[in-house]
Image (cartoon, rainbow, N blue to C red; front, side, top):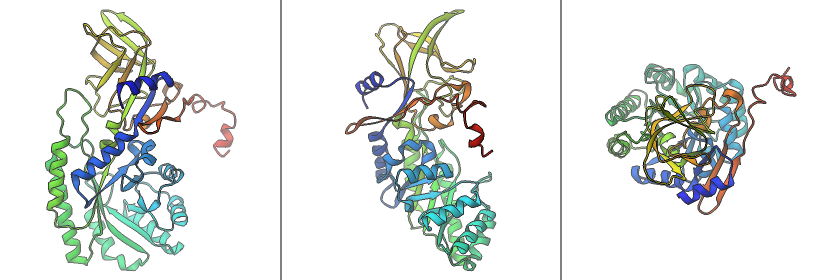
Length: 400
């Protein structure tokens, strides 16, 4: 997506908006596949950006889904459920039963606890439906199970003929800049799989691993991406486990593929500080590790005339002193009506920001590709209806 494409989007759509480059997303997944080779399958963790699900169909090998809502998004997109891994630390019984009844065991499930394993096994038996499960191993947080629990489940697996334990899953963190830790985790998994085979005759068919590859969000940070990916590739090649490996990636796929566009709506100087006010804000834009605007993400000033740059503090439209996007940022004579484009905003911002704060409208979502041009997939959405006790039919919607 070029500067001219962004200018055309601004001409056509009201700010603020997110714009996601479909071509860049597809190319990103292809690049990862080339990096890791044919043995490795790329699983897109759709929580990073659910709007890219249909875009990546046929390029990503599978999709990580962590809620009933995300599963419904996949269903509306017409995805093949054999490519869906239904994860989540909490799965309601009705959701497990409903998924099994609807898709008859096409998708993979993760079991995140002994109780969740028992519920999945019970549902398979009662519905007489096969189910495929990945046992999630914990790293000492609320996710997954201890090794001892996984050993007990595998030791007793013959009691559940409709349940197939497809393999193990491990996800530990995000924005991993230390490849040595990833290598140690994979070595640990390799050893654990050897022990499961030796003690229980169990051979995993799938190993799913979430490496948390880093994304360089800020201009003053080193770029660890290539170094980390290369170390991960070498460690994967060194595994004694010879089956397929699924790499669960979200942020590292989506982040580089999106921009957030906001318009300058006011200019002023208060007590010697130059302020540039925009129609967006922190309720719509968030970078991992942003630290109250102390770091500088990639920003393009559309309309800049060149010449001398001065330091500006860029603030959003919220009535809170915390709504600061940039501090002491060099801009060249910004004017109202011009636009700032925040790069690498393709992951999480559109869903994890405090979007309902102050009842501001949700911004538009635009998809772009060279072949299809622009497509608005979500127009401006008023949030005041969601924040109002007097919305018509609100009691009916609550089941009252």
